[in-house]
Amino acid sequence: MDSYPFSIPAIRELDSIKLGKEVTFFVGENGSGKSTLLEAIAVSLGFNAEGGSKNFQFGTRNSHSNLHEYLQIAKSYKKPKDGYFLRAESYFNLATNIEDLDNEPRGGARIIDSYGSLSLHEQSHGESFLSLLIHRFGGKGIYLLDEPEAALSPTRQLAMLRRMKHLTSDSSQFIIATHSPILLAYPEAVIYEFNDKEISRIKYEDTEHYQITKAFLENPKKMLNELFKE
Image (cartoon, rainbow, N blue to C red; front, side, top):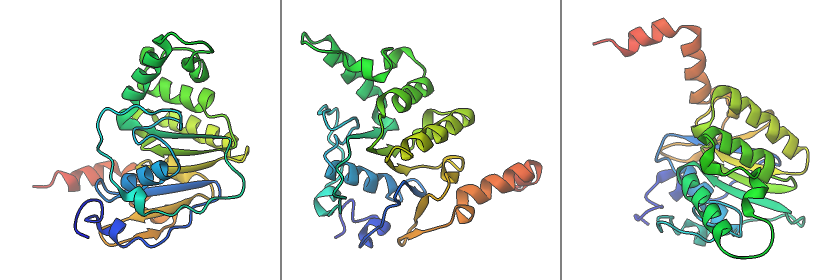
């Protein structure tokens, strides 16, 4: 197959992938297929392609691939009690949909009350992400996150790691596509690298994210001189 998403080498060559019990990371360059696979897993599990819990059905643009139609997900006999698919690029649309639903005349609690009660639009991007992690993610769930570091400072990425540890201690599982060397440091996480040939498991210290960041922090002047050479 030459059409998208099978035009992506790593996706085309994918046969099977074993996820970590607690945390699995997908890493690779933009366009390598990591977000495409994460999205397909989310849709296969019943989540909205643009994010949210399984109750969200909004759609602003039908741009997701049909890869989910080709996936077979092996599930545990224990059914997750909670779950969420977070996409940084469509989080604004999700926040808007929550406000729209809460403005409709209906009984029961407001949806936003599950997110800390304060409108996600009235918080900074980073604050609203943390509100999601702290208030909405309830444990015993599966959480799929696409580049969550996009809105988080290094300090808040550390706060995210702490919250992840609380949730994995409560029988939760994370699958995360990321570029963050801070998030990738999560203890005993399974890391898969997407390259122009395949998807393969890789150690944290062998990731480009770790190596480049370490080299830069150890000698930024040297790296900048090399970078700016004519």
